[in-house]
Image (cartoon, rainbow, N blue to C red; front, side, top):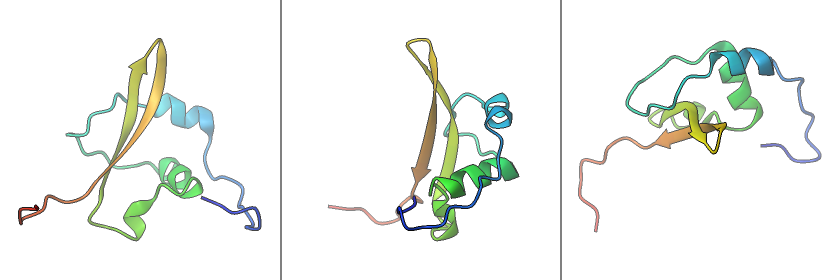
Length: 84
């Protein structure tokens, strides 16, 4: 995420290339991100794994009313102690 006063770098990814690589969302399947997808996530501030390496990140699309909607899913590691 950027502020108005930030100097934003030119994105290092191609929209059409990313769209061609989209796969259906499956949070149970781990995939390596392409360099373009890493750049996309960095540009939009979605690269939480940089500061929180224990957070799992999954992405893909779901179908909704004839559209393909991109899903970004972040999951904390399973907690070993009970809460509450």
